[in-house]
Image 1 (cartoon, helix red, strand yellow):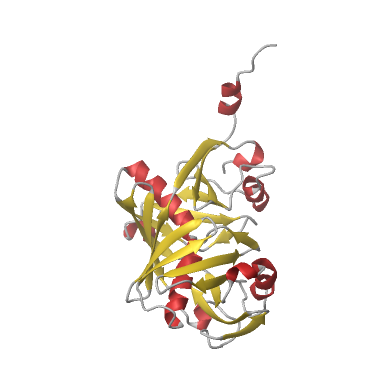
Image 2 (cartoon, rainbow, N blue to C red):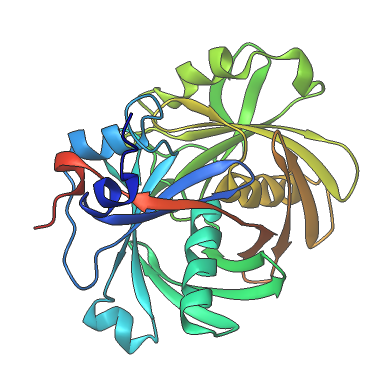
Length: 295
């Protein structure tokens, strides 16, 4: 039986990609700088579906910075596409992975990335440890956004033991509930009605947290568009801030433990959050079929 030349088949395929993960959040990263890349919703969904595509929690596209971004010193624009094929505003773990790739590309120790919500500064903390300046955390109701004005420190929604949640925005909308025993709860079942409540016109990422000590929090996040993730960087940042607002911690540095591991969150005086955690390169390859098309 003649041996197949797999290298020629792969080389003849489509656009190159890199797959990375940060605390088992997996990201498919495609370079769209020299040749623009605009996947359709269907193509993005297929790429992220592990049964028929590469598999990932989000598709990230590297694009040239806009004129405004370049003026702020941004090296590249990061487009984030969720598993439902729609653009997302922010993702902490994605930013760390994307940032590491750009740091490796440039050989720099620090870099600025442009996103939908503005520029984010990234820097090397240690070997495959990246810190990201995630931006300011807001609890202003219309910036989250909410459909009507409510007390964002005691949101009037209840789902089982989830009550008196804290609504926040760190580029994307979140609500955080603190509970006594996280392990005893079925988070997706309890979080889904909150996520889809009409109070949140853009839906919301639902965090369920448990205070372990003055410096440690356990967290589970039910993310838009309806998945329980093993880690959520932006969710970790807002959980730490919610703990501060509720008087559960008086520390500026908080360790947040999730299913896949932990990250460190530093909360600065201006409510700016810095997220630090690990990144890993998984593999590279080429997309095939229409999902690899260039426009």
